[in-house]
Length: 547
Image (cartoon, rainbow, N blue to C red):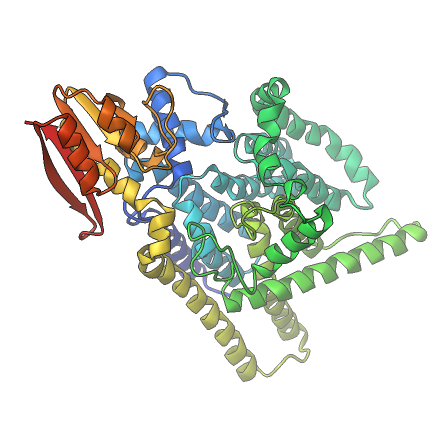
């Protein structure tokens, strides 16, 4: 099952390049609009660019760690306040995660085929792809986890340079606190994996504890700014978690019932019904296509068996005070996969709003795909051993047919996921609504219009407007139309007809209501009106201007 080096390099480049390409391709038009939370991040980035005030934490909109927003600001400065500028950072984080996962699998000493298969699944996963192209900061969680454990494994595999590698692992762990709330459980993952290497090796602990101090130093130095902020703003630390928590479940639902419902919902999302939110998923499809789900399940069983076998062996040797105990590399990889999977599901388990919620459990991605590749490595390893020892293995012809079929369906699953993302998902009407396509097109209209002396936007009846009339809940429109939007006042339809200034007036109507426009005409008789259509007539807006 070996792949020649030059073929492996070619296929590696092909898979990585393909995965990176689909994270940037048509980034300006897919997803088809800009969601409220994305736009909020973009507006904060624009304000920071104008003021020069880049923060470690942005408290508005339930609070968001500042690293991602500050990086968004950098790319908006280069590409402008476009979809491409807003989402470039996410495509970059997704691509770097893919690259890091490839290096991590190689650091595991996996076979060439397993490395390619694991990288392929991550590269063509709808779950990872959708968040690699949407301006949410959560995509940084799998990025940090992958590179953190890559450097940790480098420290294990390269003892002579373990100080620098373990320091880098600590730096990434500290950096994770600047990303997304679900990362806060990651130190426990790190502790479990580190403990797996120290199991039954007291002398190793004595040798490594000074190097672990390097890791802790990296964590403290990098995470200190956000920790200091939280120490004075504890409400910001817990606000978003409180809002969606099982402890804030709907009336009539106890905490235990909410927890059970959330656990079942999130676990079944991998196999049966996935995220129902059209921003995150397409038609409730499972997080893993069928062939991948089978691999993931088998890999989970294999890894749990490896962990149980090693712990049993450890207990047995400890009772006999046997110094020869040693855990296999499979044990450490199994602990990594299971720890990431289960612990990074906890933020999802503890929430009840919008379950199953694939964004809150995004940190489980590296664990899922490590476990999914284990069956392939297991088969390849046992096949190689049987060839060396002359032992019996299923006949070569049957084995090759089964193995080739497995790879074929794995590839088909990836191709199907990508096709769904680019050619089915963005056309869905619920997706257009979820990404506020109407408000996006409205923002494009405002951006294209010349500014008058007195400019107004009439909003929908349920829209929130700030007292200054300079901000509203139409964040998508505000982001797209920046900076022209600052020359407009937001007004409620009926209030605006009695309060606007008729001198050099321009009124842009979100809703197409002839009666309302007639009322504005009565107040300001010299207003003329013009119709604008977007998306082949799907959205119609009107503009009234002084003659």
